[in-house]
View 1: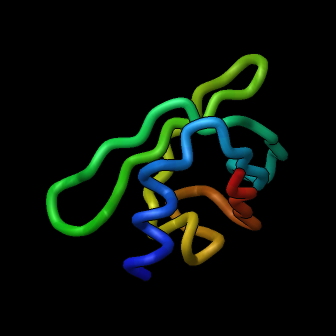
View 2: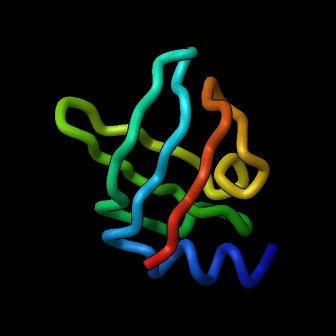
Amino acid sequence: MNEFMNNLYGAIGSEVTGYHNDVPFHGTITYTRVKYGNDISVHVEDDSDIYVIDGTALLNGEGGGYSNLHVYFN
């Protein structure tokens, strides 16, 4: 988990795919920030939306209304 979070924190420009409330999206990480505790908030932008996803949801592949999440590190 620690290695994934360290990689995720520096992953600006990496791609993320998944579903938000059963609607598919494919976007790029534009911003990351450390949250209280040991989690990271990740902003993913596609052509029309910005998705704010927790790092633990990306690690687990689901959570918070998101499913089938995948990160493609550069």
